Image (cartoon, rainbow, N blue to C red; front, side, top):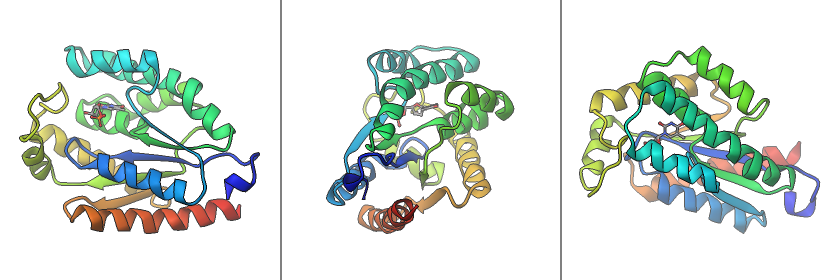
Length: 215
Ligand code: TMP
């Protein structure tokens, strides 16, 4: 366990999915699992996670803007997040559970809004060279299911108001990313009952932890 070895870097886990996939409950379950294993954990989110990042989040979620502006602001917030929160935690042996990371920019601004992947990859290499989550959990739901869930949300933000077609493109891009790196991604069917989703995720992470600790 990293708690026994303070010089060991923490594990970096990110959660992904289209709006309405049901990430929130699962994020907390993972934090509980890691803490129960005696690990220190930071739970954070993107865009956001720092003072400046939360201000940028507010702009992104509520002000209309062009897709390139949106992509660059996502990365601007991420730069501060990586430098202020993620890297220091990992270097100190603290695990990071992050509600979205660069895979979201590839899926939303790339798949959803048509910005070429190579361009986003180049910015990602500049903003966080060599940093990638150890494990990415995709809670996968069809956009029609997500739309039904989002219909219950009273004040939907700019992204939550996007069309079913948009979310279908985002979902397809996520699934494409997962298929390209199956060792890194866990795709969970988010239409199952939340406790079923939770047990699939916790089983998987228990194995990831064993593998991580044996390195
Ligand atoms: P959240 O509601 O899951 O906190 O995420 C905020 C919104 O930002 C969500 O609709 C997805 C979107 N988003 C992107 O479009 N690109 C990104 O890189 C990130 C991190 C989030």
